[in-house]
Length: 152
Image: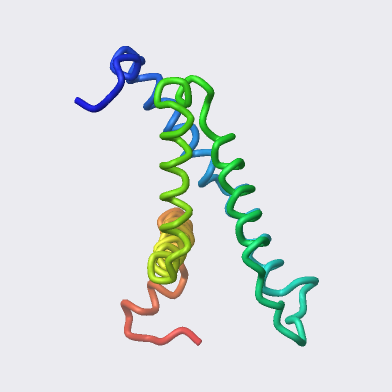
């Protein structure tokens, strides 16, 4: 009920397709490599742990970083979505996302969920590769196992 009239007339399949494309782009292998490289560089700049921790950021630096993040996030949405929902509502929504990510518990949970997804992807991909290999070329030790002889 609270949706603007323009949003109701917006073709739903197009919105679903756009969201699907964005999710695929954000979760592709190339992006995961970028995310992990950024994470590594932020934790170990230049490949070594810093001898002294970074100084705490000032309030001005935090506000500038938040504004830069908001502008980057606003750039993700197509103009048509911003026109339908309104710029102020889009900014309010992205601010809520940024405030949520600033919460340590939510941030920690998000990191654990992403690592869980990554681990599941890597383990399942590795397991399926091993299963395919085993199905195509059964190992020579399988006959020995059936005979009760251990292969060393």
